[in-house]
Length: 77
Image (cartoon, rainbow, N blue to C red; front, side):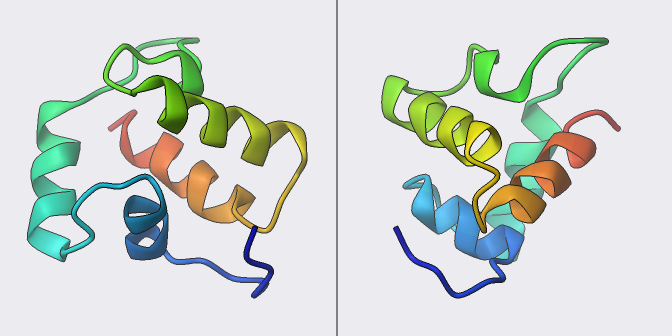
């Protein structure tokens, strides 16, 4: 795993194998949402690999945590 200390939302999307262009991220956020207490990694729109990465990032408090937290927040608006 990379250890640069800071990863942007664009970096996270690229790591998840998704388009990391701003317009593609905006489209993803417009199509997907989290409700109430729904956990980010448990959302139905992730593949198994994406889900594993998100779970590990959160559980391990990795350097991806801030970007993962940002994504979680954005999906709740």
